[in-house]
Amino acid sequence: MNEPLVARHWVAIAAPKAAPALATSTVLILGRIWNANGAEHSVGNAALMVVLAAGAATAGAFASAGRAGDPVTAGTAFAASGGLALAGVAGYADGLPLPLLLWVLVTATAYGIAARYWRTDRRDAVAYNRQTTVRREEHGHIERVEALRAGAQIEVARTGAAYAEQLASALIARAALPGFDPAALTRAGLPELPAVEITKEI
Image (cartoon, rainbow, N blue to C red; front, side):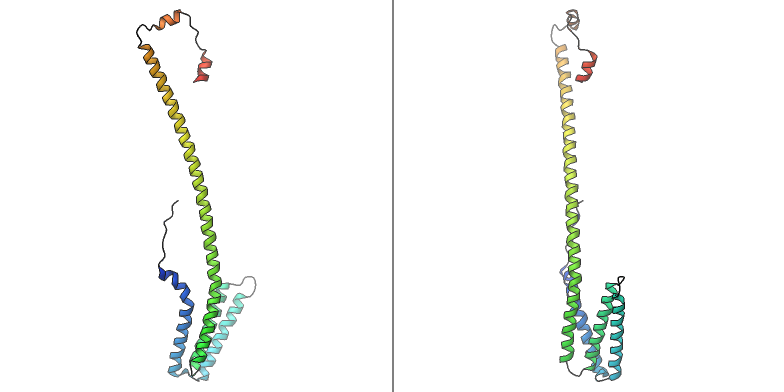
């Protein structure tokens, strides 16, 4: 019932928050490396990136269409489309201002999309913790009630045993008294309790 508490490392906590910026920065760096290796003002390379980005965006649109749309596939496709567009601009442009501007826009969009999923995950985690706490309290209450009931039964049994022990001690002490004669009690005609009443008394 007592679950071990596991403290997460700060890297494990910070990694999901830094992932969008790391992804877009990696794409920007790779685009600039591509730019330095002959992609600058290359129409063929730019056309290739436009076709790939448009294809990824189309795939994302198809994945998100209808009631049976898959949001994870759609988000992945749109993220790929943005990354390809950023890489294409970073590779084609001759200066840094336009790629940096596009990097800022793509990073902000990525954080906006990720924040929605982070809120959903946090809401699910809070609901799970709340249900776990309620369940733990209910089980704890049942355990306390059962412990009280068992304690009461033990006390009743202990009281009955103490009464039987005291009664046996009294009978033994009476039989050990000097001059005690059970036959004299019988001759005196003292009344006896009926068997039914004795059973009820026991």
